[in-house]
Image (cartoon, rainbow, N blue to C red):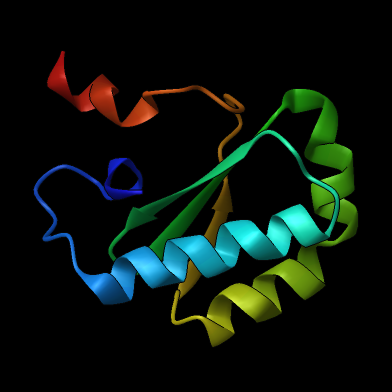
Length: 91
């Protein structure tokens, strides 16, 4: 789960719990391939491009839940799900 925390950010139990609960919530909505990336106050959601419509259709519920989990901003990554996407900053 620590791979969901942005480079340079301290990995804490609080952040890991936020990510885990956010991902569990999305799984409960039926998303199977996903990541929630933790960027401080921002949750960056990665799902498969074919799941974008479903995510947008549920955006109010998702946004509300993520705010309850402590995220100030909730975003959809338009590049879609990419394993290791946080490594992009290392190039």
